[in-house]
Image (cartoon, rainbow, N blue to C red; front, side, top):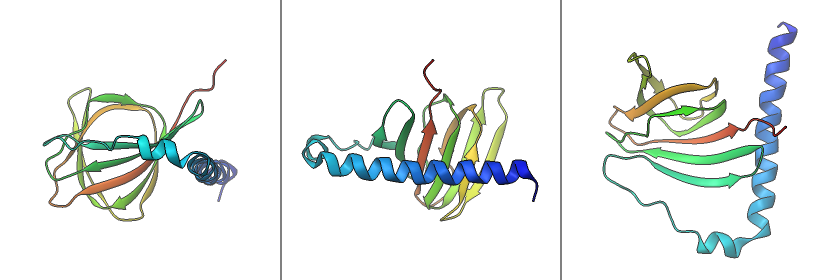
Length: 138
């Protein structure tokens, strides 16, 4: 295995460990604040995004797409995605091209920034844990 692959895997593992530690500490700090947070409302045809944690370095969400649900078209920054419930997603890119991806439970992917609109075209609910990396402030 070459050095760049080892470096990338090392960075990826570090991101997950850091996100887990930060999220655990944040949840322990203020359970009362979590109790006050309103749950994400399900809207027919739209995905549900539950924000789990955010600071100046990362944003951590749980995204749920029921069959037929669509997400907003957006430019997504670099992110690491872990699939909690698998399914078939279709991504429509800014240039009009589409791509179907069959996600399986436990899949972990590091995804480069892209402008896309996701849609669940499968028969099962798709749920993913996503860590978005933010650009460092200068």
